[in-house]
Amino acid sequence: MSIPKYDEIMIPALKLLSENKSLTRKQLELPLAKYFNLSDDEIALEYDSGNGKIFYDRISWALSYMNMAGLTQRPKRGVYQISETGKAQLNRPKKIHDFIAEQLEKREPATTTTKKENQQQGLHERLSPQEELYESFAKIKTAVCEDITDIILSKSPQAFERLVVSLLQSMGYGDEIKSSAEVTKYSNDKGIDGIIKEDVLGLGKIHIQAKRYNKKNVVSREEIQKFVGALAGTRSDKGVFITTSYYSKGAIEYAENLSGATLVLIDGKKLSGFIYEYGLGMQVEQTIKIKKLDGDFWDSMEDVNILPL
Image (cartoon, rainbow, N blue to C red):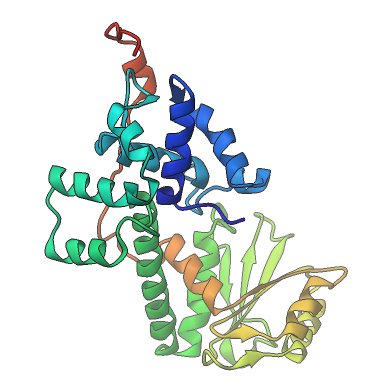
């Protein structure tokens, strides 16, 4: 079963709270995972950004929305109890999402666009705000990476060769070695477009071949074999083949099963992704800081004595 959305977690979480005096988010995690029949891998799965576990984050947002709607209450930080309103709404589970949407709108009136969206789909099948942010970031990155590929294709093959050598340096290869990178002479490169020295004496070298191809132009196994042949002539066992297009299945299998040498294939998608991530020719347009409570700070303060329900 796939990891449930935060709105799908609400009712099962509310039922668990109705069966227990109080629970923390952590105490809810395993019972909810069992309810949704999640595997250990699904429970542990993190966002691509590395910013926490997806399932646990969705539990947090489910609890947050229910708390804002008055279905739960928090006697102290991180601890949740079902409220009288929550008990009443639990008797009409099909209406809970509509009730939450109504309560949230009362707290912060929605824009016309948001109202229309809520009318069409209610609170169902929505991403959490954090996931919406990640999704928006992914869309922006995809669009920018497309622009990166397009602008590369507008440049000369020689400019592309210089670009990929600069990229590998930006990624840390030969960065501590003076004059570590070299773009070979275009008229006599013998299939080697660039060289990066990995040490001062130049005993370790990475040889590069760069192909500025149309996006639809597949790189065949034969082209990879020619590059490996060129590597043999340099007595090098490390090569990187970089293209703006993509590789055939045969080319990929050949590179993966190559013995006696290490050959890395970078296609157009990976290339633009690396350029984006390492900031080569890029500018930071905007920085967004997302903050969360410092648990140690707030836990060091004394709590108000809460009478049991």
